[in-house]
Length: 366
Image 1 (cartoon, rainbow, N blue to C red):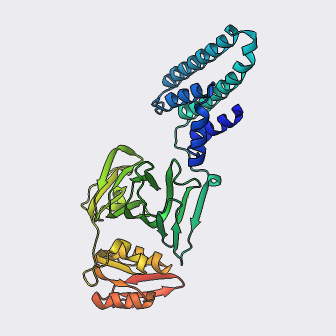
Image 2: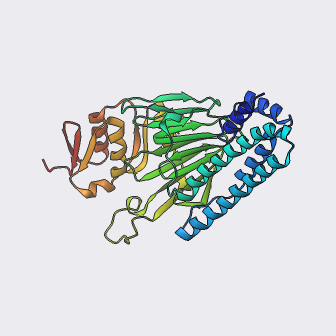
Image 3: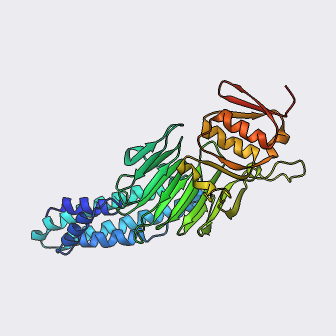
């Protein structure tokens, strides 16, 4: 087998693109004598090197010098072997040297990325499968590993094309319910806004719309590990029927004159239980799958935000005191007018429609 085939398979292996058949082929080739087996061992060692973000120019310069020293020593060793071998062996060694040189180039490119890139790389759209729903549709996605995702309206989900082979990475903007096939060897990560959710096999709901300043994860079955990209050392393990809301403090805290002013960039982690509707025992966080909008002691400002997305309207309050009224119930087949009429049977208020905008005010103002 030509060296080029071994190099191709090694490159695919360390980019997590290797299929099961290709992995078997590579293992067979590595049993044969040659330089490829040494290259494979070298790359294995390289992957174990901890790489950290640099904090100063001095740190970067020191790491770059160490990298150059490593490359120089490896190149020198390879060249020395070629010189010391009899002339008849030089041709065979040149093939190994080309592999080594190619590996050095890969290391230089990877090291440049880790040394000089301050932000995590955005996923490349060319390497991802993407599903998008509009404001009036949902979509069920069957992933290659046997997992199922139900994507809510106005959402986008992307996943790597070789999903399940080496990695399982999902990027979500919007809301989705995940029923993940268990695979201990290939854990799955959902990247939702500023939050990473790591799972092996479980069922959970994630809401992470771009226009919201919070990310919500609600666990139905199994276990998930949640962490914020701003504090990756702080990992929170959820158990069934638990939920977490992560977001900026000023948006999450209840409005009030006496509420303390907190830094804009500080994040708050709110742990709680998933909510069950008393009338039909449906779970509020995933009722949207059955085309139900369920709410339990929901403040009007929060319910109005959900209704905006549910009915594709915008809601504005003329009186802030109305935003604190709480409601319990559910909507299924009601249109926006029927839904508002039902709410004001519980607490009187007035509303008017202007195109797709709903203006809500106190009763008796008109």
